[in-house]
Length: 604
Image (tube, rainbow, N blue to C red):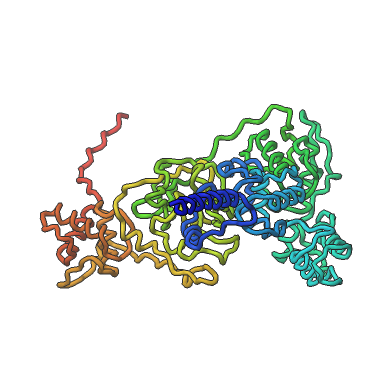
């Protein structure tokens, strides 16, 4: 008995030791917890819309990006999770971090964040705050300067060699010869000569927008205005104007670069609107200055320099200065579109304005994927605020991305299918194939061309109505079905060319003989029936030439109204009745003949 008790006590003690060891191991950085394969797959397939961070900077990005990413958390020492893993992966991509991708924010991650902050002129806190995250996920390259090393330096040296600026060894070490090559390139291409290959310069090189060392600059380059030619005009504002008006040549906006931007910044500074560096880079301070001069001069505050804004900046002797009384703001232009997201049919429809100003004209219809039943899309009416980004990342779901992100509300947006990286060929094919079915965590997924159309055309003030419970519409869904994708390029294998609708006349009725056409029939006779029933008010969806449920329902309604058996079958007799009624409805009204009364003889 004593031996048994001793044995049990020993087991209990051993259990305590193991438990203590396990507790100690929970916080040990040396034992990272790997992601399970099943969890990884689920993230890749279902990753979507929870708290996205725009990857690229939008117009007026620095003020507005932070507003969007405030749904994500600030990451700092001691944090764990998929968002930390995404941070580490991004830092590793940009060669700031070389530790384990553990999802644990420890000293190596903190130092990498600190180095990144130093490179981008941020406070070196080692904390990945919202500003740091927004810049980190917007960058495709780290800045390279004297002392940098790595494969990206080697790639830069190779590119500089191909362009004829660098003749040294492809070493991966950014030393004096590499610095001089970058300076020569910058000088040749009219860029600020810094000797630093920042992210913008690397993008220009990669995009093939840099002159070779042997190239001659084009004589057709847009000349920058010469500010020495400005004269003072005797008007109440004392605004200097050029002797010869400065010609407007192209639109300038956030992200634009070059001499024109530099001259515009100089001019805005002279007018008292701009206090930033004269860099030739159209960034946040330039956007603010342009918006300010637009507001003061009664223009729409877009931050984009179109011809009207250009002329106010350079050519208007009566331009209103910052401290003067602003001109009245013009009446806003009507919002051109309204959007309905039909959850039942998984179709997004864009409506334009009719002659009465109502949104009734169908402009574009697209298959979409709304939220799954467990994570439904936010039903209701939402007003867009104009926020968008060409790429975004979803921190909650690790390395999941989407293109052409257009914000609907603080939780959801329109965007493309899901990608696993910031690469056009990294689309999740399953995400594309699910279009037309509930698949997201609330966002409205669209094909890439459709998401881009929304991104390019739909702006601030547009009302988006997300609606449940609409009538099933198989004809419309069939008409909008998408082609399969090439798995390598993630582009449609054969982009279908829309078939032109045939000419229609109620009088040119089809002849189907003794046949009875039913569901699944298709052809020009079905198209004629759909068009005729639409004119008669029985059919309300897309005329496709395919006999599906909505067509059958319209035929049954017509049969019932005409005292026939409502079986949905289409016969020649029924076609004849439709044609007769349509022709009678379209016949012009006749005015009865009235014999005019004789004109009275005028009194002389």
